[in-house]
Length: 229
Image (cartoon, rainbow, N blue to C red; front, side):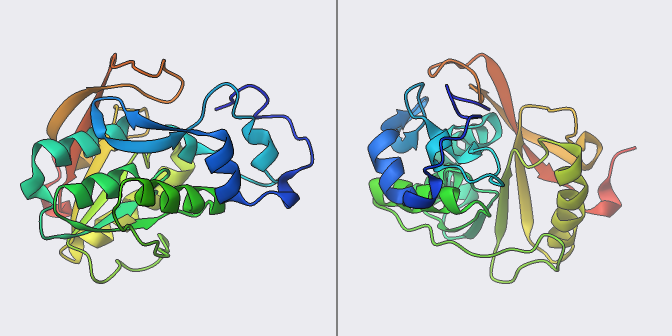
């Protein structure tokens, strides 16, 4: 997850405002396969290490991930999935999925814990002339109120996160909230709990910018009583 000196510190994080840094150092570019959406995206000269504090997570928000791309393409191809619905973009990263939901007629909020990612979401939403307000979500807690659909892109990228995420999403389904998961079939994806809805040609983090050599799928999380065995 490094771009150039991403993993090296140069001591400037405390003096930089995330929004100013993103505008100055990332490129506002159309999303491959979704040219109607533009996002601030990292490139080899971004030097994202200047924005990072010692305890910061990797800047996942600075690239498009396969699962988020699949969800965004799905909303563009099937706007009825989100039109008129209240959508939560969970683990939003760049805000791509929430932006796509609004463009397809939904009302979206974004949940993202990285402050730099939060700044990127606000900038990306403004660049696309949509509103995707941030909300705080505790995945160790109860299902959130006020949503019809949770769109969770790439949230099973490692086992530690997955162990928290799956029970939370199951609580959401039990509370009557539909859950769609976007993922390129990573190792920790709980496939036995999911029903594939659609698949799309996408790129992923680390791929060449215009790559579409992977398959990103959209899955529906089944209620526990309908889990396949």
